[in-house]
Each structure stands twice: as structure tokens, then as C-alpha cells.
Length: 123
Image 1 (spheres, rainbow, N blue to C red):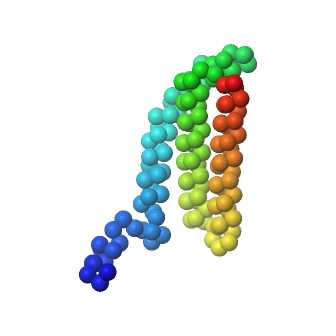
Image 2 (cartoon, rainbow, N blue to C red):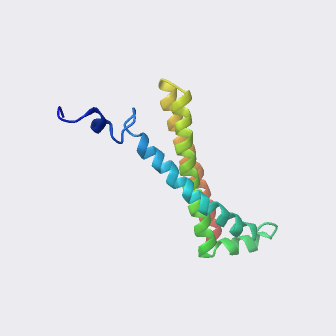
Image 3 (tube, rainbow, N blue to C red):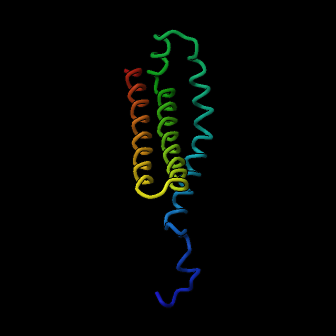
């Protein structure tokens, strides 16, 4: 390691040694949501104001349910990443770890509930 320059040792690493990876995950989920949100609005928009049987039959089809499921998964993963950054910036000590665990659990619980409701409509 003595032959590496300071710049070579620090390439791709922030002070936390994981900033670049987290940045790219946020960017990729942002781009995915940029595509998924309009698709979700257009597919969900046709079901607004309809009765329960129409909505369940509509989401029983593969394309609308797939778009809704991908939007739920990517959206809550993006929420988890963003809220984790927020907690890391403003909460410190043991409260930070507790809040990060809470945000992660909240994100995965909301994702699971949404996917369960979607699967219940599909079957």
C-alpha cells in the first residue's frame, strides 16, 4: 500500500466508504420511478371511479398488476434510501441506528402490505 498515492487510495470512496454506491442506487431508482410513475398513473387512472369488480378484474391482468408491483417495490426502496440519508444527516448516536432500523422496517412493511393487497386483488 505504500506505493499508492493518496488519490489512488481514495478513488471511489467517500468518508463513509459507501457514498458512491448509495448515490448510484438513488439515481437508478430515481430513473426507474421517472418511468414507472407515469405508467402507474395511466394504468391506475382508468380504474378511478369504477366499481370494485371492475378494479379487481383490471388488476387481475398481468400488465397493470406488474406496473403497480414494480412501482411499489422501487418506490419504497427509494423511500428507504432517502430516509436513511436524512436520518444519517440529522440523528446521531444510538438513536440513529434505531431510526434507520425503524425506517427500513417501515419501508419493507409498507411494501409487503401493498404487494399483498395487489396479490389479493389478482386472485
